Image (cartoon, rainbow, N blue to C red; front, side, top):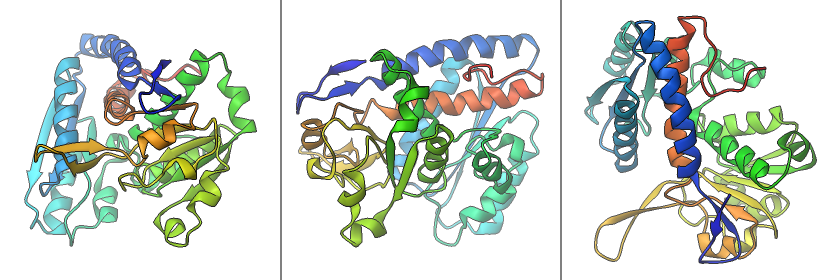
Length: 314
């Protein structure tokens, strides 16, 4: 399940190991689709020059190449207006070589997420941000599960199984706190927790400003942080034995004058109290990438009436 943390007694969950296993399964699925004459294709849309978004785009571009999937990258200037951005998404939705579209965040001022999400073909909306797909996810009948929350629960489920616990028995007896309410991570993570019959608490920056964040996170058996604030959650915010999943990818200056990525957890102080936690980098991120491409392959397989390549049969 992982190695002991240098900053405490917690286990560090190895996201790269889980991602490698999923990628192997996905490679087999891609080969099957290619054999039917269909090449799964991902398109990304990036407006502006955000550091984290650029880093994510490079990762999914590389993974698409490793898997043999098609890849199209569209970069728009930070000054793009909403109508042009919507037209770009609409053109990709109409392209038969594109099976999945990822609109990278953040968007420039003046370009609304809602407008771009509504312009997506729901069948190609691999992050489940179109209103139709959000509704299906909320009802527990998802077409696609957003890749980052899917990665969080893939990591949690694997860790529980690796440590001799049945996820179906674990979650109904536990409380999950989700810190962050974004449309693509925090809110769908709440839905996935509820789908597992857990008690789920949703917190965000308003909870923190009110001085109440620790009131909720200290009661959590499982903590998922997706607030985008470096070191927001410290050891005093968590209970002993928590399993903490860190989604934060925050660029901060390093001692050499460069940039390094850190999470929302203060790693060392949380590791002193946690049973297990995910690192940044090397935790949720690699799994997220494979889950995203898994949804792209699933969209291509849907044309062949085949099931999702990474989900267990019902």
